[in-house]
Image (cartoon, rainbow, N blue to C red; front, side, top):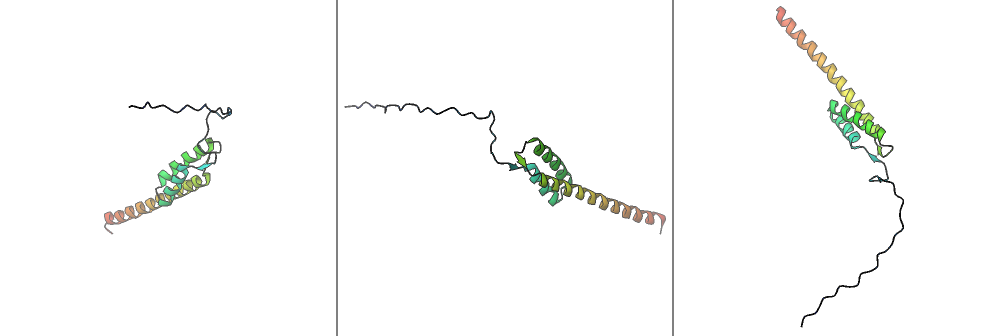
Length: 112
């Protein structure tokens, strides 16, 4: 003899009051650090100066436009400072090498 399977009776749907939520809810209600700012700082420490400067400027722009949801302006500024400092040091070293190179070949070409 076959039994018929009966489904349990459905429960009445629970009614919840309407919530007045904003149209777009941010992922987190707490401010978060900008990934670009962190990247800028790391690249500045490592010595990849040009990318540290680029990421630092992008991070500061995003932080300013975020309305307080992104933080890390200090990290972005530190990455910018390290990036510009690294580029300045690289430029000074390049000028010194160029001076030594010209001096060495100038003396060799003059026969002295």
